[in-house]
Length: 92
Image (cartoon, rainbow, N blue to C red; front, side, top):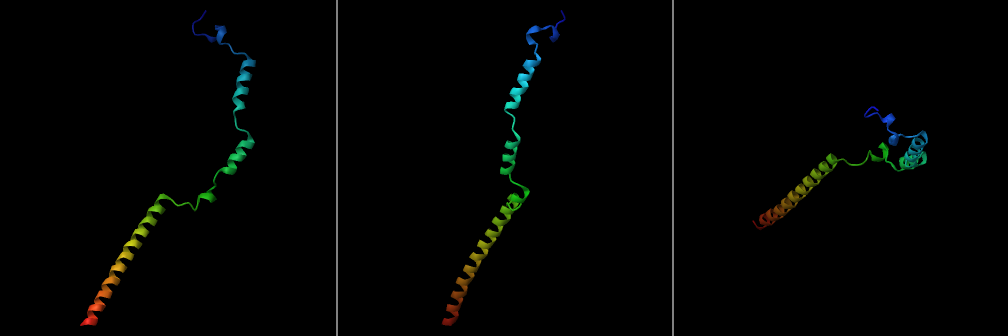
């Protein structure tokens, strides 16, 4: 008897019938064409996601909002100062 030779080891011998059953069990859990079609229908396409904003887009928008808010505050302060100057000029 040769050590490590699996042909001589009767307990690890797999028959063709056992192998066929193992392969069949493996395919029981495999997805069918119908499963794949359903999954494909749920998936987004390039057309669906082309308009989704990226992180860079969000950062740019945030900067624009900050700039707008800063300009709005500046305009409010300017208007308040303009009104005060007009009142002072009217008194002079």
